[in-house]
Image (cartoon, rainbow, N blue to C red; front, top):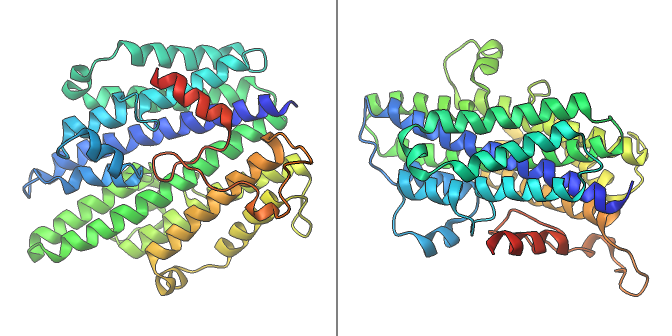
Amino acid sequence: MLSRVAESLFWMSRYFERAENTARFLDVNFNLLLDLNKITHVENPNYWIALILVTSDKERFNELYEDYSARTVTDYLVFNKNNPNSIISCISLARENGRSIIESISSEMWEQVNNLYHYLQSVTPQVVHNDPYSFYKEIKNASHLFQGITDNTFSHNEGWDFIQIAKYLERTDNIARLIDVKYHMLLSEAENQTEIVAGSEDIIQWMAVLKSCSALEAFRKVYLSKIDPDNILRFLILDRTFPRSINFSVCAAEDALWRISGSSRHRYVNNADRLIGKIEAELSYTAIEDIYAKGLHHYLEDLEQRLVKVGEQVHLTYFAYHTPEIEPVDIEDALPFTGVAGGRAYWSQAQQHQQQQQQQ
């Protein structure tokens, strides 16, 4: 497989997953405010700033808007073309990657990407503000349909594995960010609430965290007791059977990487395989008490940085053009992190060119 094709498949999948996660966060936040409105005052920017913090875009957002509200955050995360992580930017870039390899993907895959792109071009901010539920449901369903079409119309070869790697690396990164931001906001808010209101609000917000990952029903099937932060973190980080947990996603990314390279449990072929294998092994033997001992924020921040390194090594191993004159001596430092928007990484000049084309 050509590295150009593999890279475009990787980024097409990653941008689609990022758009779905953004839609998921916004949808859950709107529903959260409807629930909270019954018991507490919700005109608080903290309910919206969390969404900006999850995407690591606070500085860029502050340059464009004066306050954190439903209208400004929605505009930034859905329609702002200068935000490379907005839904419209992600789908545009996914479409651009698909268009560049249209001969390598199925016609059904291209049709689905193209349909969602044109749907977004026809939607106005007023439509979203009037009926956010229907809009975000459309984005999520479109992403699920794309994944189903891909699984059923695209050969499960190396190209399919690159799609899986991208999807699960992006998913792991998003879940880690969500848990980190929401966990600390929930704790700080609870300290400033009366006991009765704090208890009700705490439960509603923890349920919102689970809903953000489509995990509420699956969680209740495993943990029948009341909503408990320890159990929620244990489920979202360490559970090996739920498709949106960190552990499951890391294992899925590892399997796809190893299918491509031929690595195994006791023998790794390249640095990307070694790094993902190390993360998976540590997750397998980690307990929630170990995470608390290290500090949840520090643990998740470290995990995010290690995922960035995995992405960098995937790029270096499979996508980069290698020339003896410029090949670095130390493979660990071969490709420094040059993330966009304070943490959402891209790793090639082609991606930078696509970002510039989108802004024009």
